[in-house]
Amino acid sequence: MLPLSVLDLSFVRSGHPPSAALHETIALAKTCDAAGYRRYWLAEHHNLPSVASPAPEIMIGQVAAATSRIRVGSGGVMLPNHSPLMVAERFRVLEGLFPDRIDLGVGRAPGTDGVTAYALRRHQEGREGDDFLEKLQELILWETGGFPEGHPFRRVSAMPTDVKLPPIWLLGSSGYSARLAAQVGMGFAFAHHFATHPVDDAMLTYKEAFQPSVWMDKPWSILAVAAVIGETAEEAERLASSQDLNRLKRDRGEFGPIPSPEEAAAYPYTEFERQTIRRNRDRLFVGTPDEVAKTLVAFADSARADELMITSAIYDQPARHRSYELLMEAVRRVSVTA
Image 1 (cartoon, rainbow, N blue to C red):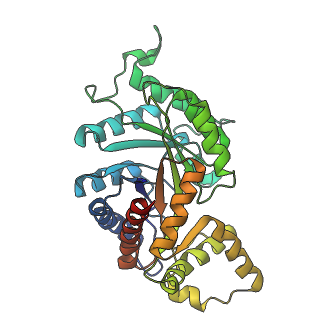
Image 2: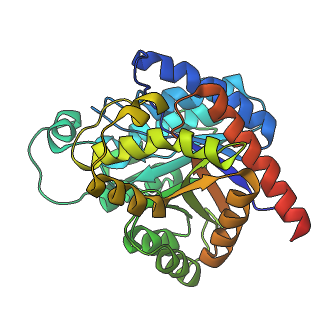
């Protein structure tokens, strides 16, 4: 069966305090653990009113402690915002506490706007250029101990030293991360839910260029998609209306909490906005369980993805839990009949 996983941004809901989203994340993780999902990844975003968690490593520990089987990881740690040593230390601590259940997904973007990214920096010297590759290389050296003779970091240990870093995954929405993940022999996760780069090109690039490494002996790709599943097509459309309106507002710079279906129904859409929503549906899968399951399994197969990761900004929490349960049940049925 095609493995299913979860990407959770700890969405803030209209009319609810942001901290409630953190507790809702833990509750959803328990449901997905029981349902049979493989991974539960937490994202890092800053200064976004719609996202409650800027610190995935904290939420990873809480989710792992509240679940028993599912792998828990970052989707991802935005490496430009962090010292590689701090990332190595924090994830070794998590691996020490929850052996063989932690994933370290790293991203190249800051996960925020320019001013907030500047505020997050260790040193605010206004350095120009992209230092992601430099930081990734340093992170790898903290694991391999490969700092050369005479390097000041050679005498520094990332504690606890008896624990290895969890598997490292590179996250991306372009061909750059696909090529880099292949070159360094790491797992690759592609963000279809917001990418404009062709998914087939990124996945094929990764698979064909992959070089075995100490991290992985063969490629493994995750395809992250947005999906909303309802018991009926009408219910799925009602639930998806929140995501439609949120995306519409986000595209014009309004990053507010997720609106309720009632707010979405009352919104005075223009014809242009309705056309925009229809176009945005290219990156949102909406429908009944079997309908969405068949579409997603076929999509993963055509993209040569090894795993699907689902993100879903459903306002109603019982319906959100049920959406994940329904999709798992349907994918199992599709796998049996395939």
